[in-house]
Length: 350
Image (tube, rainbow, N blue to C red; front, side):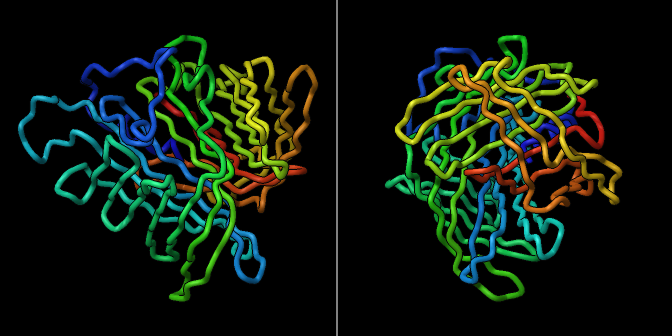
């Protein structure tokens, strides 16, 4: 879903303000860095996870809020000038339906209807909300035409700073990078409503937080990203940025044990093999929905065979100006999480 924000930025005028460059060595400060960074071009609060119903049924879900600073003149005095644009997306993966249910919101910031806080996580977009409470819990509420969430996410582990203390390379140039941290193993409780009937849900989730002004190298046409909450309490983040031939422009990620021992993965440590492909009848795109990922972890290879909750977790957002991509709930032996596959229906043009 993070790709929707990047695609939106492409539709805006070419002239741009000067955006800050992501550089190594920036100290993170919480709760400040839970909040917005409005001078940067793009940013997201990205929650994925698994829900369990009272009957024991497993569902995947996503709730994501985005902020982008469009290339408008900062000196424009009009209250209607789009100094910031907010976008949000929510999706539900139910194998009984065999396809995603999804909903979205978009608005320019202002007027109390679309706002972010720079002090901590506190986002309003129409009737959708994500807010961090002083005790560290994250509450989010969304209401779409087919479903609604009221969820509370409780951290069980500290923030995981990705890359070099939060400076996460995404390409061969040092500026191809983001500031990036993760909250894995979030305990989840709340309510899911469908067809007017609320049910209590529990589960586990994952929060990705990134902000950047130059997320992708010009050679990149898409990416594969995987976030896994492992049953032993460890967390794995794995990604590769792909070029037009399917080769890795960059790759990386991290592993953190339950006790907090963290390993940052270099490009040579992460290898994606496509595995089984699924072809969408709706869009014609073919996705490697069951890849095998090999990770060199402390000198030893770890092989992860990915299994999707079901194949058709494709989201076609072209009706709202976004791209076509695949994002869904997956499992591995000893863990579960989310896989995102972008740039397979058509290359991303940055």
